[in-house]
Length: 255
Ligand SMILES: Nc1ncnc2c1ncn2[C@@H]1O[C@H](COP(=O)(O)OP(=O)(O)OP(=O)(O)O)[C@@H](O)[C@H]1O
Image (cartoon, rainbow, N blue to C red; front, side):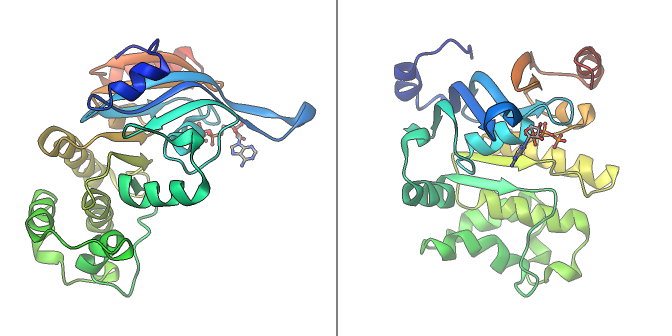
């Protein structure tokens, strides 16, 4: 997927591109204190792909992801998600889009402690008044190894299981994109690897588009593609990245 697509391409290729940016700029603050956290990034993410965003601390990874997900306003450029231009949307439209077309997984699992795993997973459907597709629920939970844990509350689950509940909650609405910010950050290495394999399976077997921010070259190696960010710019774009070549690329940008 090249980065020279026009806005018209991005709107007409909605079947093959899940999320894209054109000359995206995000500036925090004004005057001499202003920080250009994202400095003119154009990128197109293929539907069904698993993409890692990597780069040194402060390079703009989370800001880029937040702008792609409609969690943050942008300063300039354009963002398209699921065939719609979100950079032109009003707040109410954006809120609806985030609820129905986007899934989120964060480092902290963000589960509601008083709800069971099943109730946590179904929460986005409940909030938007949508009915439960029991088959999809069973399929998603089976693929994540959660079928026998659905009646448990988060406090009765391990960290790895809690993060899998968070992934099931993100998958249940069949969103255009799941955005994951350091999803293995609170897990030990064995549970982290299980989780990354499950994200890869969700992309390969369910066709789920996933965009993941990570510091970890080993984690990014599970993705189909790694975008390298430095000083708010796209400085590398690797297909089928392996951990060693990612470490070399990262050391060259000072990470
Ligand atoms: N709300 C904010 N207000 C002002 N500056 C911000 C804000 N959020 C981020 N920044 C700045 O924007 C730049 C990019 O931050 P961002 O969090 O996107 O980087 P990152 O690559 O995700 O970093 P890390 O890996 O440390 O989480 C940094 O210089 C940061 O200080």
